Amino acid sequence: MTRIVVTNSLTLDGVMQAPGRPGEDGRGGFPHGGWALPYNDEVMGRAMGEGTANTGALLFGRRTYEDFATFWPNQPEPNPFTTVLNNTQKYIASTTLEEPLPWRNSTLLKGDAADAVATLKEQPGKDIVVLGSGQLVQSLMRRNLVDEFVLLIHPLVLGSGRRLFADGSPTGALRLVDTKTTTTGVIIATYQPAN
Image 1 (cartoon, one colour):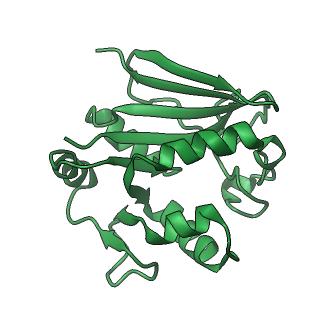
Image 2 (cartoon, helix red, strand yellow; image 1 turned 90 degrees about the horizontal axis):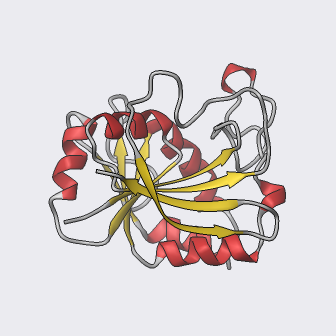
Image 3 (cartoon, helix red, strand yellow; image 1 turned 180 degrees about the vertical axis):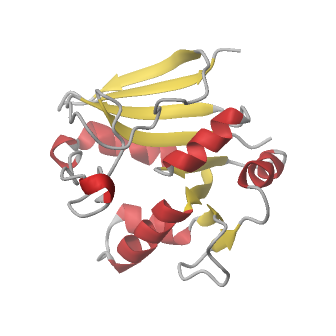
């Protein structure tokens, strides 16, 4: 059975919006794009590299997919993230996109996203990793489809922005199964459902 692993960068106050670069996601007038960049280091790079070793596919919501598809295929190589992202199978949950999708190895999920992901989980294989995609993560949590959270918790408070665990999120207990601390103070915490 395949596992669903959610990997996201968060601030101490839970903001996940636009960690990667300025202008990445300005919804709601969010002015802090790129907030995670100053915290990258070798420890984080190694941890993320280790995570890709067991990644069989990526899972995106529409908005995150569109952002990644316009950015990553155009990044110069050699760049390990570009190569991995371009070559990995990508599943996209969207009711508005249509195939063919512009980024290679991209497949649109048919029907209800949570039902489609539940079907993917029944297949043998490596992990399916969700990056970003807050609304999709919420729908997967409601159906108890997330097997693991890898949260990169940055020592930063932004006070506004879209949060991974927003008000009204499904409730549930988690247990800490691994932790690493980077040289820049980021805690990489791995959680699994407690039940």
